[in-house]
Amino acid sequence: MDADPRHCAIAVIGAGFGGIAAGLRLRAAGRTDFLIFDRGTEVGGTWRDNTYPGCACDVPSHMYSLSFMPNPAWTRSFSGQPEIWSYLQRCAASLRDRLRLSHEVRSAAFVDGRWVLDTSRGAYTADFLVAAGGPLSAPVIPAVPGLADFAGETFHSAAWNHDLDLRGRQVAVIGTGASAVQFVPAIAPTVARLSLFQRTAPWVLPRGDRDLTDRERRAFARVPALRRLARAGVYWGREMAALGFLHPPMMRFAERTARRHLSTSIADPALRRALTPTYRLGCKRVLLSDDFYPALTRPNVSLVTSPITSATQSSLITTDGAEHAVDTIIFGTGFHATDPPLASVIRGADGRTLADAWGGSMRAYLGSSVAGFPNLFLLLGPNTGLGHTSVVFMIECQIDHLLRLLAHIDSAGGGGWEPTAAAQSRYVDFVDRRMMGTVWQSGGCRSWYQDGTGRVSALWPGHTWSYWLRTRRFTAGAYHRTSPP
Image (cartoon, rainbow, N blue to C red; front, side):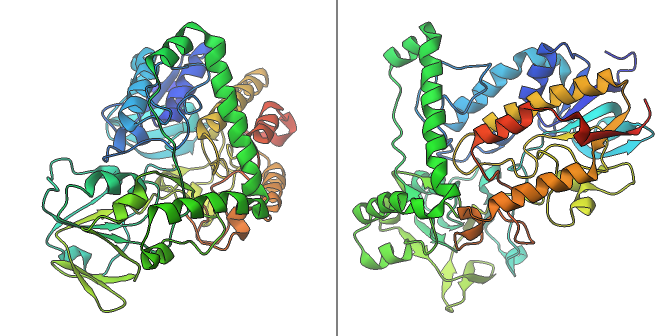
């Protein structure tokens, strides 16, 4: 470490999948002078914060893990939150001396060739900054008129109130996305009444989750090749599924499965019509569930499709004039994925924030580096999210590129480095061209994949192997030095 305990070569913001993976790979590469900052009291990021009932991953377990830190002991084909969080804690065990927990980064500015970080526990400096805050870390609470006057309980699914006993309560759930599809079936049997407010019907496919047997887990532990084969099978299966996202007419085959799932689960024609999407499957996030539709047929559950206009002390009012009496509101309304709050606190060499530079639409070279922001590297930055498989794969691709970039900077004698404006522009133009024919751009919906300008800035418009090819070929000419060593 540097003699100054408040200075490090590399500062990492976030101790979720990205920050932990970065720390492990940096240490393995012999780069031990780094610190990982996180606002929480423990590691885990999204999987630490989201503790709602039924919380689980929708990517098969063996793919939703670090390739260099396998876990043969997964107990289910789709792992739940407690198991994933426990896995991340084990992964981070060797990084405890590098962690700075309960250190919220309030600002980070590139000043005089260094990054200056203001944290809730004092200032730090670093030569290089890795932002691994994650796209699903800042919950969205919609601006409902009158919400401040509501006398009942309110919380977002990402900040679940476990002290509140939901038994016998009149609960409103706002949103029918990936979180609600998991917690609604978990709480429906307990509450007195559940009103589910749906803006747009989601596409739901069967989940097919199951327990992994003791025999399977022993085999994965004793025969690493079998575990790698299982991971490869999941990977290539998901890559085949990506064809529908990239060539939307192919989605009609998956839509048949989803419609059959809906028709066999919901007997009531009116309810079935209300739950039938009117856009192409994949335009919004595809949901996986075997118990969501059955939960909506319970006598104490009702689906509300009229938009909410306002809240009173004890109810929600919808556009059809109906008043829905509730004493608890749970927001399943997603996250600031395309307008991350961290972008408002990171300032480049000219004093502008990332949010200012982006002007409402995130852009970065390889989704990782931004012109005007020397020695800054983003994990799961612009256009690195996925609609079909594990973002952990993308994180690993980016970290490989980060290590190549650091080696290049070292060999060039250090200093402040950033992508050229031309290289960034060419890359972003390529991404936008590729996006045009995908289901996310042409599927007939508005989704959180799109930013306020209508551009799809959250997702990678291709197979993950194509991103791997791009990140493994380091192009030195795409970067230039902007400040001296």
